[in-house]
Image (cartoon, rainbow over all chains, first blue to last red; front, side):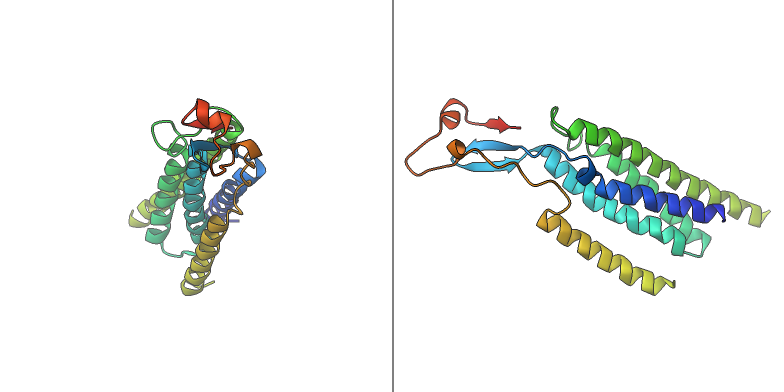
Length: 139
Length: 57
């Protein structure tokens, strides 16, 4: 199997794991009482709703690595996967959307960050592989 | 698989994902609020009296 396919399948598997992670390791389900019978979800809820949408895009781009033929398209897909994985790691940070300090959110975020970094490595590996192949072609 | 078929599948996948996000299937359901915290006309719960913003986690 070509290294291209290995990177593609690795990125797809990590993205799908990221997609289902809040179901496997749930975040806290508490809500904030604003008074008067009004309750809003905590910030970890909004952080992981955003994570879900970004991970959807990561799954699509990762699958694109298996479909795209030209080196430019693969280069762009790998770079976008890297950027999306950076967003996945950044969103739960306290200076971005953040998560609540208690509950299962910390545990979920720990695995989310690890998987996000693995996805970033896949994106970088893809970019490096295509870039190297393009340089060899020109020489 | 050609590119046009992939784009259609990707679009369908994204729409299904958005519907899942809307329905809340992607996350655990919210914890039920205790009955004494429910708003009743003419009544205010003890929690609401003590704190304007109360964290239920």
